[in-house]
Amino acid sequence: MSDSYLHFIPDRLAQQRARELFSHLVPKAEDVSMWMNETKMSFVDQGTNFDSLHCPICKQELDTEWWGQAMDNAFEGDGFTNLTIQTPCCHSLSSLNDLEYYFPAGFAQFGLSARNPNVTTEQTLQIRAELEKVLGCELKLIWAHY
Image 1: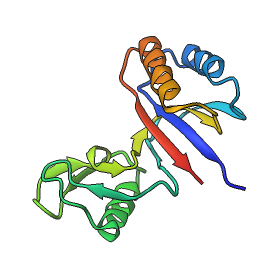
Image 2: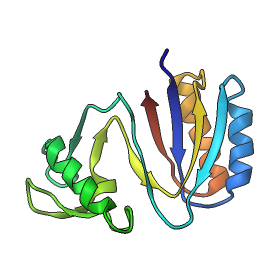
Image 3: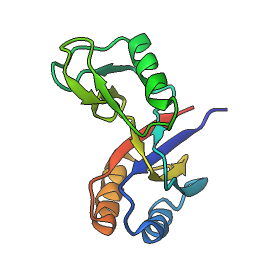
């Protein structure tokens, strides 16, 4: 049996309050969690929902082998403390976090997750809006399937 996860990755603000609200907003979820890493970034992936990734500058699709090597290079040593990359397509400076992942993915030091949240797309957007109000920042919505 496989699981679907709904992840939100905001900046670190009002974390406990946001977790309590999130638990209230997804009452049918099998599990709701909050995670935090004070010193390092974590990559929040989309699991089997990964389809492709594109350059944020020229929009060209990027090779996953190049991306895998860029991820390895960024993780070496300090573990995702420097996400700066030079795109292979247009040779622009960018960030691993700014690549256009389809489905979305990203880097964060704090996140909220719900396993099998049992919510509609409309409910997901409403949940994000309520959490953004509590946290005072925009959230990246990541649907992961494993």
